Image 1 (spheres, rainbow, N blue to C red):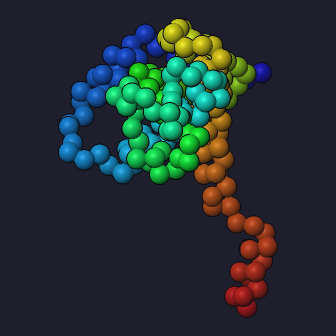
Image 2 (spheres, rainbow, N blue to C red; image 1 turned 90 degrees about the vertical axis):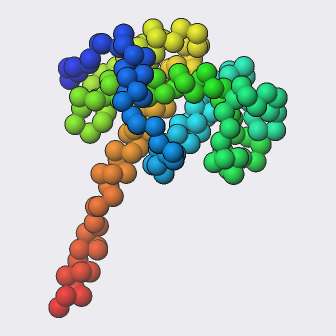
Length: 176
């Protein structure tokens, strides 16, 4: 059994996020990386909400009723053929806090993801404590899906520069 050191100080997540946002200087234009991260988070949250069926927290593109209540994303508009979900603004604000919590929980690991038993359940329990207004199913699904996305990123980075044995032998053959 692997012991996992987990920071338990989640009481000030909202304060920490506000302090981080206050430290940043207001920019006229967001960077491309930030825009891509925001669009990815919007798509990810819409996916989780669609899977849980929390219909009061999202709306599909062809059913937009009140545009001020839901996010507007050019990226989702370009991808959408009627099946993608647009999360409410309140959910997106909470999702940014969930991201801070995820990064804080896994921040002490070497590759961005803690190893050990019950890491997903631990993150889900922390989400349930801080966001009681959402269903347990949604928060469990968010915790699991977010962990799997991080695992996929780690694996893709790990195998990005792997070279096959055949490739190595061909390089040697062509040198002679």
